[in-house]
Image (cartoon, rainbow, N blue to C red; front, side, top):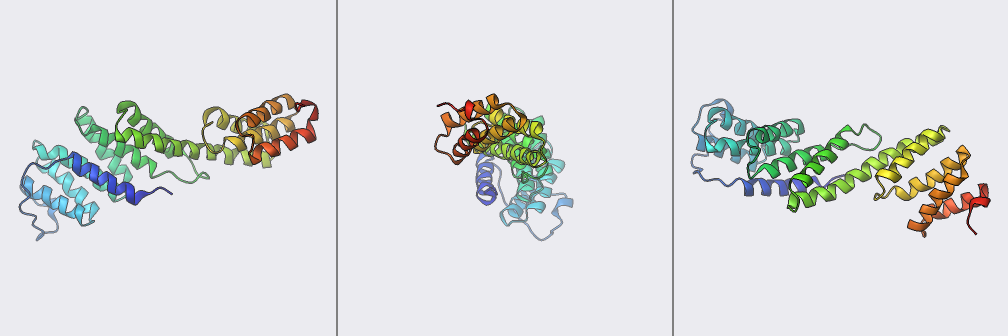
Length: 265
């Protein structure tokens, strides 16, 4: 559903670009694979973590980056390791740990120059967990909030630009959920409950692809509830904004059939 591989590459580029290594990387040492539990100097330990990440062993990389902070909490490497740990967990699709690591970084370094990246990574972790519209959308709401947070905090940045694009997709997804529930209510003859869902789409997700159908469903619902005046209002909005659409054509025919006196001449 979402272009994860391309996004993952972009995140890695951003992470490695934002976190410039200033210490030497000598001693990549891969002789002892259980490096997460062996005391090592900070340069070697960080390099081992970086090597695991570069070769796709993302969980090992995350554990080693965590170990950098644990063994050398006062080293300049500790800050870098926190953020690289978050990215490594993300790459391993361990979204909860990625979010926790990024949030820990922000709690300790709220004003750091890499804070925008940490906020963006949190948002992406929620975004990639969005499920289809037939399931609970709590994570979708969390993604929307986190993406909005990125836009609010860092306007004008590439992170904010990408967040804006993703919010459009998130809104479309949330509107799709409302439409699914509304159609289900329609099929059960629960017209009032259905119109409330379709009204929510029109009022709060009006820029999404679901709005024309939502307006048509409102025409259906209001006619079924016996309020043709409201049906006419929905049809008029359809005519004004989507005059050539299938949904306006269907709404016009429906109004002509069931409330011709409310159709403008």
